[in-house]
Length: 281
Image 1 (spheres, rainbow, N blue to C red):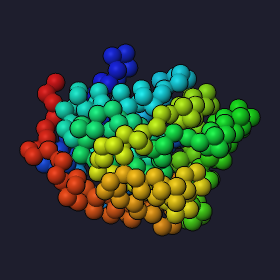
Image 2: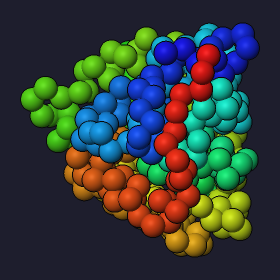
Image 3: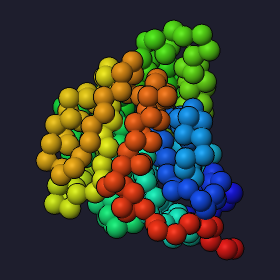
Image 4: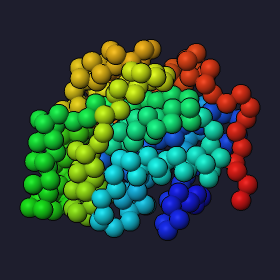
């Protein structure tokens, strides 16, 4: 369905609207789209109302080459809740999507039952991290969309995933190559410019599951573990046989961890007490 989140350009939202289960909103990472969650959602079955959409400037919601800040992405998400009638969902975001989830929760924690972040750090980036992303920006024009996607995704996926029969690697590259280099660089600038969301979580904790691939080269799991030490009640799961794209590398393990968190007391205590229903249009 189309659920408008901006007056000028409505975002394409995929929402089954099932009122009998809690809602999970999935947010894609850099150079991916909502399809990255497909196998995770298959493993979840009918355990949740699974809502997906491509972050603005990605996939179905490409809107040109302008910079879309983390703040703007968070605004899209909060407007989605208002206009699509989604009450207290669980947010599940990977990489860029994780940063969006963290910022939305920092803006209005009462709107969410909890957060699941994968490969995303709540602290504002260090100089070393900014230099790492700046290197990707510098290489982007010379590589072009397809080679840029290949280089990034080769380091984002576990080698076992790339080598397996029927690997998702080629499809991920093909989809990522449809995004312009200018839009990709703009997304990296948004990541580099993000504000700190760790302090708000430490002051006012929200049920939080931090996940990271055991072999993540972009956001090492030990850094994510340290991130959670100051957040009361935060849980950490290291995803085995996985790199930065842990939900793609090991979707069954990731889905099981997500289900356990969804059914945990801190999350269930914040879920809506009555069935959710679609907002009438």
